[in-house]
Image 1 (cartoon, rainbow over the protein chains, first blue to last red):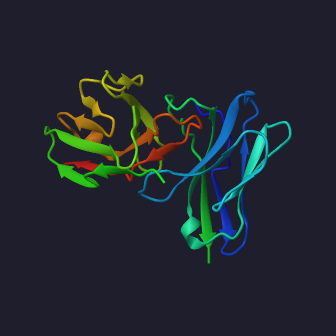
Image 2 (cartoon, one colour; image 1 turned 45 degrees about the horizontal axis):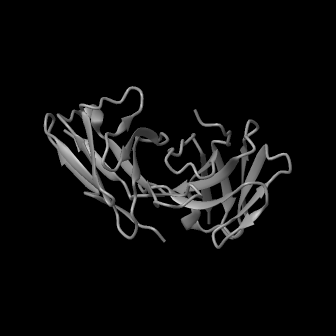
Length: 112
Length: 117
């Protein structure tokens, strides 16, 4: 079972920041938070991951609360191409031989 | 970045036939690959873990004799759906981890849409 809780859907106006929340209240100390997204009829795409510090890359920013029980993925300037299902996943770092377990994710719709 | 390909991207077959789906890591080696299945408007469900040179590990409820997995090299895993039936129609996705990395990042293929008539 997925160890995260996400809202089923969100809307965002094009050009605005999209803030996608994720609750992971049972996260362990050695578990990272990963974000993937899946555009319709494609395979999931890695976005970002982090342990406890905030992270930023060319795609997004990840804000993790101090108690690590929740996080927010931020797409700073959403475009129509960011419309997708976003998955928040927690897993132990270095556990590459264990698969990613997907929950239901958040369906983000970017509106023109 | 690491690239995973799948072939075919879509396939239509008659009930009772077998279909083979290939998953390749194009620019890296992968000792472990994973196979997922996704029904419309649902999330990805893990089917099995494919290990190079050894038997695959199947998730509970997945018939190993129906979904044959072969991982004969460090860059190729195949999933064969044997005696396919309409209920096997789904979107099949594979993923792979770069051998030797520690961050757990996995790369996904584009998926194969199977339609069984």
